[in-house]
Image 1: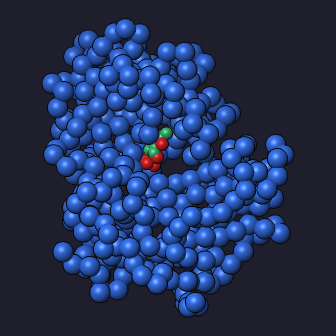
Image 2 (image 1 turned 30 degrees about the vertical axis):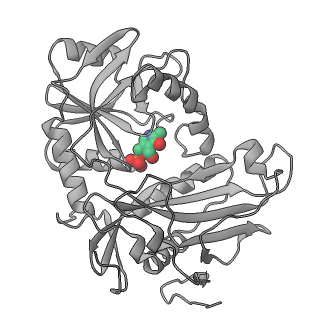
Length: 373
Ligand SMILES: Cc1ncc(COP(=O)(O)O)c(C=O)c1O
């Protein structure tokens, strides 16, 4: 077992136990299925006796718990989803890791999971990237998906905040989201279900929010739609967000996105689109918008584009919205110029092709014995 002290880590050093033999030769990087392939190493940190213990990096693999694990019963689990991009032989780009860490801590606070320190978080990710640099796919569009997760790990059937937690960071190489051009999606509002209510956990990236959305999401797919367009839980008329994306409407030259109401996830891509729009002088409004306003804008020809924003697809053009038996077709069903421009600019910055004037990129220097195709 090798011990490794990271000179940049001003807190607890990470104890590193590297793998004996890499699994990478078994992976076909041209046939990656999202979330099914995992890199050689993972970061692990345990909360006990009221504090986080020394972090470790260990071989990726199963972890052992009893069926009395508190998070399985009471849902105390928060996570993040971010990506690393291959910029050149020596450099990997992380996109807005500080924002993701801040959101993780906000989510943690909401459900009583202990917060983590940014230095430990970023040092853990940097060490994982250096150890598993070969797992960061090299082709444009591909990326390394990074999934931090913290969950209650006490063996105790008590409906209260746990005394113990496990925190992991696992990484997964993923294929290009759009392999053959954009794939515009169709959305439907959900009949009889709501995702989140102000004061609840909608703003947190907590496991239970996703579990609650699976039945309506399945029903949407059965009816032929890609995802659910969520409306507010009280009046059921204000647009909130999509299953795994925030949403934007280009109406008569103004980009409109629902305001952060307390029940909408504060998307990092949403934030990036807003900053880009402001930078490019595109009129931008964060405000309440009703589904009726969207349909009326469609009828009067003022609805120019609709697109979602999220880490997975970056920008996802919307071609159709269904609500209460009515269908609204957007444009000619192809990707609009603003959605394309947002996609090209954000991905260009992520891959280091466009200068990052916003401070979004955290570059990580990795050893250059990386795999070359
Ligand atoms: C419910 C929900 N809304 C919005 C988003 C988009 O957030 P981000 O841009 O940070 O990926 C996601 C994805 O994480 C999500 O799960």
